[in-house]
Image (cartoon, rainbow, N blue to C red; front, side, top):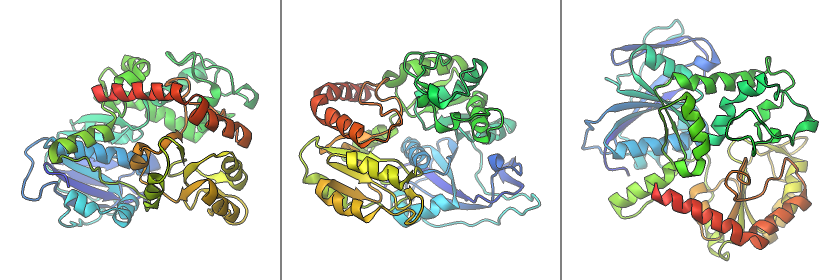
Length: 440
């Protein structure tokens, strides 16, 4: 349990409505639009130390309600609490209920009780949520309406991008790609280098761009236009923080600062939190912030494996695949721990379920769970590599790029190279990166 500071959690739902509410003396509002919704609220107050009350600045944190965003912002909130900040965390009912279901959040944050407020009515009445005088609003980088509200009422605003700096910089550069006619592009032109994102001219291929860039009509694509608006809108914040560190992504950070001078690399947050907790308690147990039930049996299985022998495979909390893609990947894997959510598979028949032949065959070649404690798994001595996405081969020189090819032969060769023939080369790069982080 965190030993200092004070924190609260606010729960909001996803219903679309016109809402006006009051934070302390400030009137805040949201429009009837899915990008600008701040719906029904329940005040969920908790204290990092029940017998203390923080005299530090009061910060409101507003994350995007997705697993990686919530995990990162909760780590950030805990670090601020350890520095004696007073934190209020605005959360969705969906995320809050999943946290209650899968982790001991009351014990971790010493939550004394729930305090329910009257819900805002549909006609826009005020709802006092008793936050007192705020010093700052920290909002997820794709929720710029919160930044705009903060500016409207005279509060400092910080935009928080939980993705890598390189990824964010490529999003920020999409208008330049359109202007230079590099978007849209044809499927046959995927391996052409992007030239209109400064600092990434020699490493970024068209296929490296996110899926929403693969559209034939950039002006009409709602997802693409939303990402453009939110990425460009971050310039309206007083500062930008990114969960990375300078040595890892210096070129991208350099170019971002041309547009947002007050950009700060604050990562990696889980490393900073572990170090801070260790300095306080003598150990560094970071509590899980998982929205999924963690199957810890995989840790005992890892304990029985040789060092650096296992490939960790996880496609995150929202990615899905077809049954054919699933089987092609499985046949190419060599000695692995595969985290596969129950809803990972789409297609005809048996949606969301792994085929029985895969489950049976995995017992001979690896281990499979629905969800695992990711940080514990990645730190385990048995893990020799992991399957991720985007630019690890070109930017960080740590692996291979599959180039969208779901082919068992290619996959197996890459794994054997990664874990065998080129293992020493990649381990050297990984060690250098870890040393950089230790110096931050």
